[in-house]
Length: 393
Image (cartoon, rainbow, N blue to C red; front, side):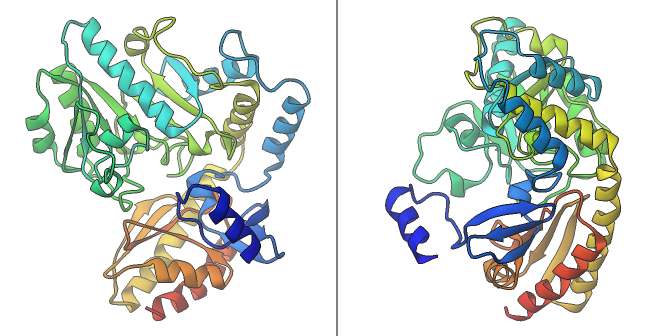
């Protein structure tokens, strides 16, 4: 272990902060490190391997496509790209799709689209209103849209044209929207911000507000999309349809891919030469995406997410009733958070040392993101380790 940790320190940027663990193999909800030790994975590559590791349908699609063609660039028609776009459109609100390589790129696409849409409508607006506690990416523009100061440190001045208001506060958003506003950008659930859910009227209210003011509603579903909340996308469960939506993470089950979906009126402003991505939507990534969506739609993964998510939530609630240091359990499907009254990284370390991988965000929120195929039995294996970790605080 010391050898690869030292080599990483010598040759890699020091960001992100890596744990002293090298994972080399995965199967379903389990992974193995370079020493052969097995772990139960409740991180899923940060909500990315939603179908689990080495899923046979995705693996077969990748292998077959790799033997045929990986990449031709965005200059040519790509069969699996068209098929993936069809699947996304026919199973969502959207009319058109643009493919890229990550969530940040998908959000960059949406931000460019919003500015151009406003200008072509003669509004001239360029500002985007997002929310405090949000996370939209680490490029300069998406960082500027992100409503967490800790990510901004050292990168000022930020890109102009971004303002944040409190999440789940319609009056604050109404006050913030001005003639300079081109779009409102929100996550259905603030995942990196601590697994924060909106009230039932918030997202529908945002859509009405955006329609009244003539601005676009952009939903960042990079983490909530592709089944994480128990439906293919999170937005129907909140009673709303956006004008634009961004996806990434689990769309390729680990193969890098991002997507920006939009209604025709918004997508129409993105004409040839206005935007592009050399690797975006290449043969390999979109073939993986096709396999992912087909599997989500044809298997019981979504139903399992709802069922086991409810089971995990109840088991976490049982812990909350016994531990005063647990302030709240919140989330939806298999995107669940446990807010503590103190720092939680020691629990993450304890669980890792005892064969379970979990995550902590915003310092005090333990986050549980297992693959959608996780079982009640695997949840039962998590709980005693987690309980011991909490007792260690």
